Amino acid sequence: MENYIELDRLSTIEKAEFYKKTYLHVAMGVLVFILIETLFLKIPAITNLALSLTSGKMWFLMLGGFMLATTFAERMATNSHDRNKQYLGFALYIAAEAFIFIPMLYIATNMGGGSNLIMQAAILTLSLFAGLSAVVVFTNKDFSFLKTGLMVGGFIALGLIAAGLLFGFNLGLWFSVGMIVLAAGSILYQTSNLVHRYTNDQYVAAALGLFASLMLLFWYILSIFLSRD
Image 1 (tube, helix red, strand yellow):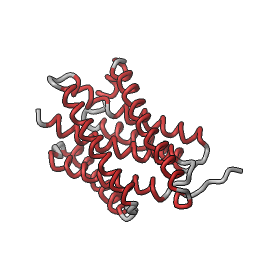
Image 2: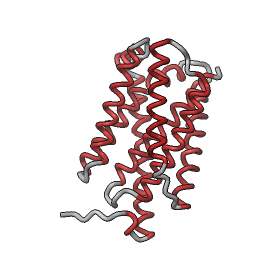
Image 3: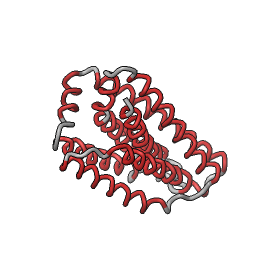
Image 4: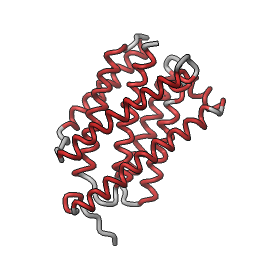
């Protein structure tokens, strides 16, 4: 039987190795996301399916399917010490993110200057992600107290999205700004989990949590960039 060691019991060098593995997997997740997204956008059937789910109440189907898939994937990766299950969960999460991003990236790539906007949004996202992660890693502060606030904020956001779809109103700029704040809090919380929560074999699960927060941040930063044009 393998021994799973909590991070607080590891040496500084062992912790550094865990962090290195985690962020390497986050980087790999981003790369795989880009590859899958590029593939999806080159297959008309998949692109048209995703676009068809953005009209009216069909967005509920898209959003519901995304939430089910990502929740299942996160549990698979987090609640198991089986490395194969962890990687399978991570892969499923990346694929779900790639699918739900199709409409936004399709619009962005087919508008004037869209590629530049995507690059600018990506650079800003990665800069904020790196800065927030560094705050937690170097201060060793525990941000687990954010969990309740993030859950409440998430439910409020879902309620507003549902109301917007049902009653046909645009949530606007300030909603996106609020979601960026929520995503920033999620990055602090997930990085805190990286530092304090996981055992030494769970770097894939830690990477999934960080990847999820990174993609949420990217979604709403890109939304703001696209709304300016």
